[in-house]
Length: 264
Length: 329
Image 1 (tube, rainbow over the protein chains, first blue to last red):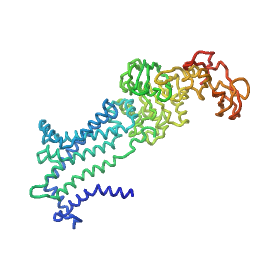
Image 2 (cartoon, rainbow over the protein chains, first blue to last red):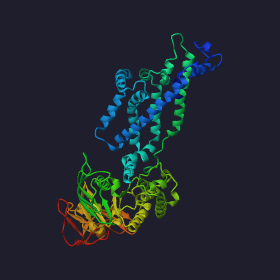
Image 3 (tube, helix red, strand yellow):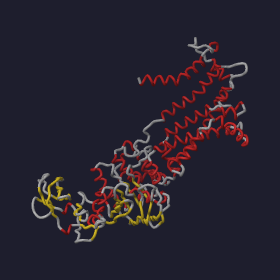
């Protein structure tokens, strides 16, 4: 019974992606049909990569998402470590405040941000995307990493201090290695969010050669054509890096890393 | 030398320490004892620099250390839970304080090896903490503390997670290590026997305040009040007459006949060398030495010499009575 439920929910999650992949693999003439395709074809993949600016968009997306991930995890770790171990006054208020920032709907912020970025001269710059992405992924990163650092036995922090570590050394030598699974999870979530973001990317970038993947795919359609096959193929390709990253990180997301620290 | 001057650390809730005055001499072995929550661990945190006092001053070797960072104090600490770094192997765990101190690689290797050999853990250097037994982890924690050659080493109930046989063995070893290093050891424990066997001097702490400081024998024979009297000694001192009279069980003889307090046997504890017999003497229970042949319900007499009696006033403070015998701990 449990197994059946697990299978059902797995299918529920995977089904849209399967449908997408199936659409991408249909021969062009069968695109509007339901059911099993008569044969599988890679022509949609070929044209998505050859006729559309997808390769460029993939590289752009990688650049923006990787930078966002690095900044969010780096700044998030420092903030989370301070909240978890240095116990600044008003700690709960800081965390709650940060979380409430992430609850603004993007559509409410896109206007003011546009004005701000124009004033700073950052429209149509990578920084114009990376900075807001980092801002909006920081609350999640801070939240996850604060919990992760709090889960590391307090005595290890005390031991590191007694052994002569400054707070930063204690973070770098002891807390970051022990929080590696949480850091991998956080990095993955931030990367996915940045990789898939459409609204800001569409609004703040104007040069075609800077477009990220969702923007590029959204602009496949023209007045005359709705290239469903290419859209499906491009979406499948765009999802693959995330799947690969998830599989790599899954190995790092192991429990029991802190086993043997205290008693036990 | 460590000097604590009216050292106070208060918390919003309970706990903390108040007005602690204490001087620990170079090379001394001091035990801080008291029941849970008496402020023992707070005191250690203040000395090592993991916490800052609310008021008062702390000097280490004559230098004001009240607000110094732990790094600048040169004080090592062995944790109750060992607090080994789980992601490092034993070698790296021991080397860590030297790495942070930027000691050269060759010297680190030599010192780690020498320390590991001294503590008989050289064969464990490549293992991870989770592959070690409790006793082995304890030794690694000890090695990490002494590899820096600290002038002062603190111990926070380091033996409480070990089984009794291992605990007794470690007590002997740590005593030897203390003589060998010539460092000042400050030892926190709630185990009065541990304090008595290890320490040159004992500090008794209760509710954050120092009740008595002195050599174990003196604390045992001349406790300042009924709290200290009851805390030291097993079985515990017999308190009678509304807690104004106290007599140690080893000074009480329980016999089938003679003069003394009459009563009936309620408990017989034969320990081999010694048999402790508890007598219900009309309200007060008195424990003393007795014959292992006695059984529960026997009519007996408990007696003791007047010179062995400790006298306390109604607030519990000891008052000088007849001469007090210097009893062995």
